[in-house]
Length: 189
Figure 1 (cartoon, helix red, strand yellow):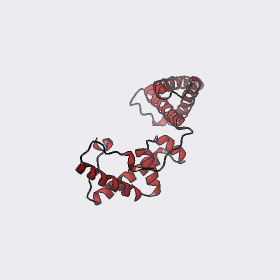
Figure 2 (cartoon, one colour):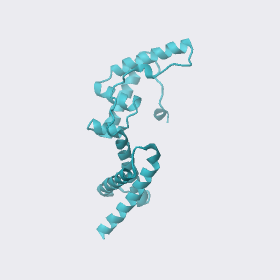
Figure 3 (spheres, helix red, strand yellow):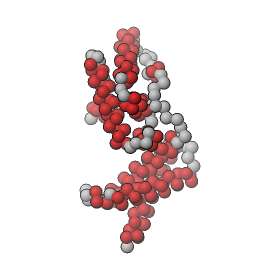
């Protein structure tokens, strides 16, 4: 009975993982069908282990199938992001601040923008090396957090904490210099 239930659960998770892989397939043209199938199977396997380890966490606030479905979706998404970055170099430092062009602004706006960028650069330089590496990788270079966690041999939670601390320190740095930092979308909610 237990084995049959686990088999049915794995089949559900595999369907969910295949759905997520198929949904994201257009953004991953370099992956072939057999690779995508392997990713879906790995995601379903890992999701099954996560579900079984967290069965006591199920509160019944939703249908059980809805609750477990998210495990497969998350695992598939993480695996696809990691595969997309496999073999790619992860830029951990900002090579140039010329990535922020000031085209289309007037002279006074350009001067203000230049002052803010210089202060941002100084503020980022004042962060700890680890905070700077995490902030630049995630916020500037767009490295997925799962990939960075894997490469730095840490976890998402630790990186979120480091990113939060770096942003807070950078915001304080700018405020202490009389500059008003912008408010990101996440903070404005």
